[in-house]
Image 1 (cartoon, rainbow over the protein chains, first blue to last red):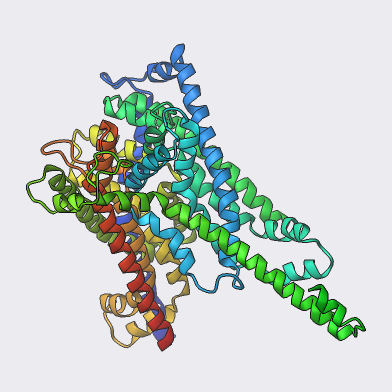
Image 2 (cartoon, chains in turn blue, red):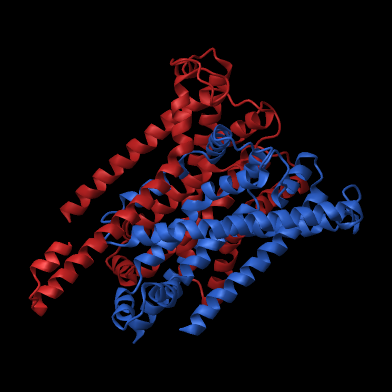
Length: 276
Length: 296
């Protein structure tokens, strides 16, 4: 009895010490991730010189003419992000389906081939895309939207393929076969069994493309002749002019949009769980 | 096809199914051909910009798309120590590489220790930790970048190599943690305790029993960190050293020249070489993997 007691006490001690291993990371999280985000809110609501509470940073973003620009930037960001996401998924879906089908694709080499361009610096790839589009007669200055979307889709396609591919590897083949045997047409099989089974993949592919797109101002700057402005680009602009307080206001707008997309994402994944 | 059906005019049901099976097989083959053609065309499109860059690395025209005759000027100037662009490119490359290695190593150590610690925390603290760990993954990179700049401004410090490393760690640590976590779940806890019972010290049990078990997760966390860090632009632009000599990584350097309107021709030969390196590593990795698979 006594022995087991000391043993369990010892084990308790062991657990104690192991717990402390996460202390350095905990400090790192607080110092460099949580505290800086709180500072964004402080900066957005304070005067750059006095440090006192003020709403003038918000006013400079949302009052008069600047509000027109701000809403245009928000609209353009959402537009570019939504178009990129939809097109990426429409292209990535069949690719992932084919790659995950063992009848058609026996090894993973083709998957690697789709991921390989990601190891070439994305700014260099954007330069190459720009030159190639000009070569094909698509001048970014003349067709800012077409060029920007092509550049975005090109950059984010692998991020959409990967989660879709992973979900499709786990597709329940017997269910698909059962649907076909019970007389469902190929279209019905696709809509009623394959698509519902891949919803988690679609949701994570959408998150992987939608949210980072709004930060990818390098691509729109290069491929739209700076006519399409993203919120990310606005933040960079404020940073380059040392306007950290106004930049914080844009960062808060961005945080709000991210919050909305997280709610959206949860809504869809919850629905999926409920459906099962 | 018609002839075949005529020949077998007095059909037995057996033969009929045979024919339909054959037809089905043909249909499958056609489907496979269409599917793989689609995939290969998409792959071609994905590689088109890189191929275009590679082709034009063999001419010294200032603008890609103009052909100035076949020559190796892009390559010879890239390895000419006196060429200003070559110097800038190699310096940026060196910066990119050392930042990635230092940040990834630190992230891997801190993240692995964090994941192990979190694994033994109570449920409440675990949830809090997991939530905090998710923040940099979900959050926009540019918001993280701005928040770090504000932190350093708030502390009255200029951005430096330190802030740059911190920035890259913020970017990469969460991925180390989420790569190590599944391995911890799979780990057999009695092994660690057995090692302790057999007289291993705490650190001995940790390094000789637990860490080897977690190694695949730690390694993939490190590799993802390297990939993210090498390719990063936003955090680098915001947190890179602001004082002293002009500090550039490949991303910020190329973006800078692109904004000015003329990307140096040496970038073409540089990209070609990087591409060859990646392909070589990929092939080597596949061969080693296949060998390992065969052994097992």
